[in-house]
Amino acid sequence: MKDAKTRAASLPFWSGPVEPEPLGGGITNVNFLVRDGGRKYVARIGGDIPVHQVMRFNELAASRAAAAAGLSPAVLYHEPGALVIDYIEGRTLSDEDIRDPAMLQRIVPLIRRCHCEVARHLRGPVLMFWVFHVIRDYARTLREADSRHCSRLPDLLAAAGVLEQAVGPVEIVFAHNDLLAGNFIDDGERLWLIDWDYAGFNSPLFDLGGLASNNALTEAQEEMLLEQYFGQAPDDALRHRYRAMKCASLLRETMWSMVSEIHSDIDFDYAAYTAGNLARFAAAYDQFTRS
Image (cartoon, rainbow, N blue to C red):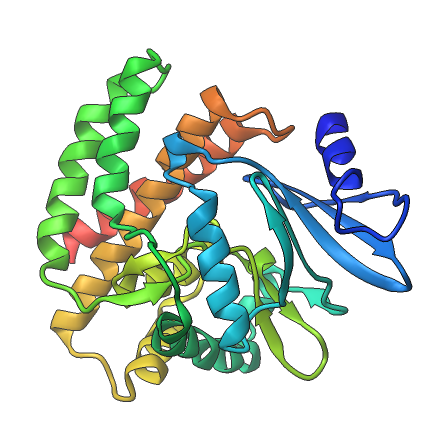
């Protein structure tokens, strides 16, 4: 944290000496609030993370495109390993906020705008985020590191194969791919979507399933989510594909945490996060296979 704070303070973007203040919540980057010249900014410090397929050229392209689409704060400065964006005065959402039906009705149009509009503003190379490739790559990373979870990998990969077959052919959109509650900000008038580390071309079902799994939506809320997003009540085939992708989202989050246990220097209890997500995945996958 000290090195990251020093790096944030030394960026040539500032008009004079600054004192970065740590912002909580980040488990991929280290983020700081910086006050300079009567304005507030967010400085995001973090290099490429190949084990998570996080590449900063991709985050920069996605952040700029999302800002151009009016979904995310403006990118004001960047250099390798550092990004400065506008600070949004507002409230970061919680899981409970996401489950509020009124809030969910505001969130779905934001996701649709992301899927429909961000790609129009992209420049240069960007990544594709295919969750089943990510899962297989995580398994190789865990084996190479002799992770304590290696004995689980055959069963997890077998489940991933079942889920990938169930998802089948997909529509491709440019997706956020990390719809945690903390990545939504409500400024009192509108919602903002932030943190584009994992953005890339993907199926819209991944964002929808991730939103549901990350925030513990009820089945009734999931039905509303699908109906509002697609403009009509889902049929059984769509429900089946969606539930498969929701399980895949949980599996990816679980294996992300397994890898982070080994490779992350951020002060966060990844072991507990792994255990919680593994239990949620097991429950969701059991329900999926029974349906």
